[in-house]
Length: 190
Length: 128
Image (cartoon, rainbow over all chains, first blue to last red; front, side):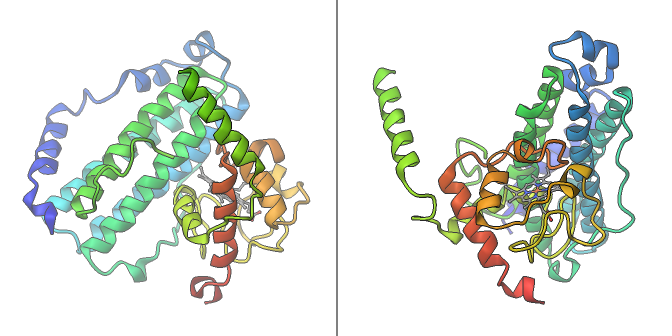
């Protein structure tokens, strides 16, 4: 698999570890700043925003569970496994930020389902797992893209766009690992 | 710039003139459906409900799925026309829906997507 000819993801994993603790972006910090700060910035965070954040949170929680399934499948070789765990770590951070923001806005964060119906029977090889993950990440890009224009609050829209960027990078790296061409499929995401 | 605007206007006019069903292509629709895969699957519930059996079913009727009150009270029956309306702007048709997604604004993409959803309903995955 072309992935193994490609040292970059492993290097980036190392870099990620070296920098962890510093990974909160400006957007995430803005989110964590609290309700007053959110209210003071452009646009009120309406109850509709909480609904958007909760749908996003549900999708992030599913992604965390999906990567867990992949990690425990024994189908992933070490560098791929490390990559999966790195991406899962990002999703965990997204989920934490989303949940805390929902709470700050007076909402009740969605919880992870007890059971997810992943297509386990179809995951028989590392390639299957990577394809499954790539599909989830592609979907996540679309989902955030479809959420950005709906926010009443501009800071929340920005934070969603920040997460979108991260999901898009996951998707590209997974496509690279799968040897898909072109690695970046188009100039625009939809 | 001017020229580009004019070309765009012509393209929009052409798009508006073309009947939505004329070029509906389920294969292209399958590509559009990838956007929905963040939250949906054909055969099982995820963040959104399963899509198998969608045509002809009442909105919010998948047993055990946690729909919003807005969807439960919408009285929609899903068919090509209601799907076209919903997918253009979900929150406009169902204010308060938890499908917080801006929609598929391009009518050709929407027609392709609906053709795919219809075809997928007959697929092996849905007939299992």
